[in-house]
Image 1 (tube, rainbow, N blue to C red):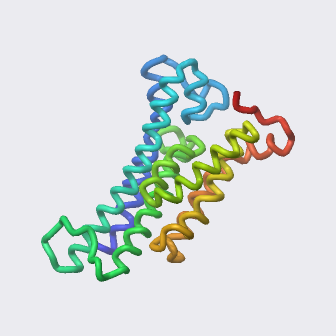
Image 2 (cartoon, helix red, strand yellow):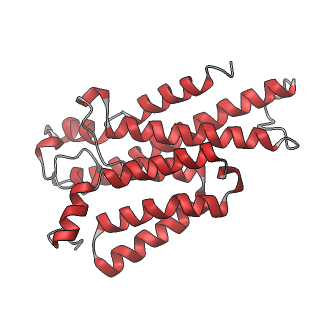
Length: 225
């Protein structure tokens, strides 16, 4: 079971992440293709540009939920492996408290799930691999992975947006801050494998903001009003 577990987590997390909630909600409730509006993105911000802020909020919630669900699934898979290794039939014991390796394994699985859910959102097979920027999905996945670190990143996001009025800049700075905060505040994320996966997730979010970065440097980025 252990040998195939990372592959199972990767596949399940990708397909969870690839559910294009923004596209589906706008198609069902407004009869539009959200990709033909504004930036062409399927995320919550662009969904709100279709004229329905309510659908934007629902998209934000569902996109975050799928990232959260992927990480929780990975933790559950790690629990079953830990129970099996312990030789116990008590599934109420998620890990062996005396074996830190079980915790490290769980966080490696969780970080893998976070990255694959993000890849699913950014490159959904259903939309010819053209998806969103991954901010909401990353928020949900990171919240399940390291909630206190997410709080630090969220405070940075709020401060950046309040000072500059650039939502994109806040998102980028929050993505930069999360791996550092996770390493600092969550000891079980400090293995090299887990940190590489977390850093890759944050880097993916940043790279997806490449157009925003160009506009920020050019001074043409839209400010939040």
